[in-house]
Length: 313
Length: 120
Image (cartoon, rainbow over all chains, first blue to last red; front, side, top):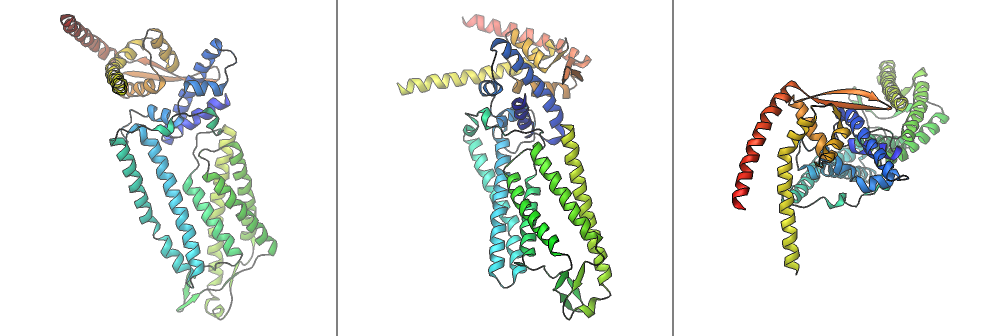
């Protein structure tokens, strides 16, 4: 029943998360019974053949199941395709702008200001992309077009999934961006922005005293996170393998961060500013350790949540 | 030749649309009447299909959901074999509404039959 389960997971994943569990239970039961009945008539009928001959594209089926809902911006036929197009359009636009921001920042003398300037243009670009996509779908709706891209669907197109919990593209995109910047910073391609001003002096030259093996391990993990975030961006639902990988990398991050927090002194400043902020250093170290402890708590919560869902399924 | 094919297609499309509209009005009545006995989704669909009312899950579930929201049906989750099933049954309000709708249906049926008979 794995393919049937994957099909229903995919169908309910288009619905609001509060409705998914009940909808899954009901539709999965319905489809299993229908399949069992057909097996009596046609022994040996595979799940793939059953889905290919009796069921429509998961998005089309999801739209039918939601046809009594009044929360549409565009008609039921196009609603989930519209949402998918919006998400994909937003991801691609944000990705392009992020790459442009990095290129522009590296080419300019004032790295961070250039980077922020390009980044602040993203919201406006997203609004334009959203408006264009909405316009296209409204035009198709008014023109009586049909969602032909949902025709000719095959069960072999299904990606196996063991839950109907969707992977957040925003979260994957954040992880990807953060890992890229962290990696560039570790290899001294970009500096840390000056975030502290003391006695009219920007404190720019920070030093973090940690052993070489730590930086190598962190760089390796960031590199892995880049690949893993890219993989997650191509998937829509969580699988057992994706959850296990997340749990393992989270545990490795917890170990590394635990090591950092256990250090007596993390932060130091180099150069002439040292004298000016000597009194502030213990407090800054405490703040940094506090921030890292909060980060560890978030990662631990994420790990616990994935473990619970893994055991539940 | 091309025009004829197009005309046939248009006629089929128009009839299909009217058939859908006719069914849309009649389906709640059929579902309410059938749920005087307790059913879960698939058993209800099978029973309706056996009685000549072909209905797919994409139509049935939103309809059940709407009738339940209106208080015309009650539902209860039960575990059967390895899976959970949601059983539906008509509520007291549903029974009252069904009785009234049945009267409406019969009156409408007689009127339409009378009109169709005259045209013959």
